[in-house]
Image 1 (tube, protein in one colour):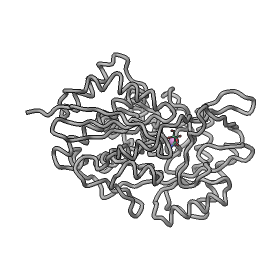
Image 2: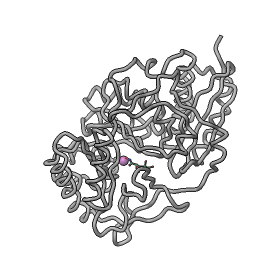
Image 3: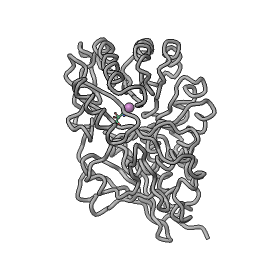
Image 4: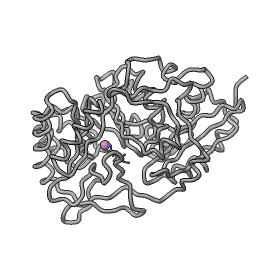
Length: 404
Ligand code: EZ4
Ligand code: CO
């Protein structure tokens, strides 16, 4: 006899930052959780779930994961987009969690089992100055990290993406109405290679170094940055340009061998189909929560595998421990894993989302518990009410709006 979904709760909580979580309960009393957090637009996804998805889930067989995915994707008629795809992701993730619990197996076993011993992660070394960032890189190396993302302030700019007030818990979403940052491509292109020159000199060739451009350049500017970074052998240059124009990456490829990673804002395979099939990127960084859940992200990674493109999953603090747990089950099982971003959550967040994935010697190890191995403490979650918070906007020095 097939089991049935009998209850679905959309839980909004803010233990330091906002998270939206879907919890599904079956008639047999099995529960599953899925992350539905969309930074700065949380309530839109919560409404999509509560008003449009939950009513259709009640009574469905939780084991029909693919069919439910297709039902929510094709059945919406209005396809894709971050709100729809985050809502679908939450349902899909919760269903995999339920299936694992029913089977008595961690989700990675259902995905084909381990392809590696651990998930290599990269941490974030951020500081205003080059001397400061050298200290941060050393700290991550001493913690056992094999890969480090490096961001510094750009001289002459008041604030810079990636450099926060708190070293360990960088969080860009702040004011209820977006704060404003200023950008100068000229200052940035002049400064960035000098930072990596110092870091390579200090740390030698082995440490993997990454850098996030955060969608701020044009293709030819990105080509120039990539070329100027070639002597420092980066593992990747992330989001060099806004990726709406997939063919724009051809121009970057003509000018540099610095590897390219893209994808944290992607929602579906259609956002990266050309990037992957023309081998215009090296790492696809889509996520479980924003790209339609475990089912769809695995489809993206499978396509990528055909073209020698590896995974590089986004793992910022606005992706909850539920998303991180799900990502680790995928990361450990797929053949073409590359790297997983790992920004530590605050103690409050970890308490609201009890989990047992753990960091060891530069690796994250997924849970061995049946399902995803993560839950939400609903009582504790209720003590952290939602607080409006937006991501910043960005302007050039003359006031022109620019990509943040
Ligand atoms: O700005 O997750 O690689 N990481 C990033 C993040 C994103 C935030 C947006 O919500 O680019 O810091
Ligand atoms: Co990024």
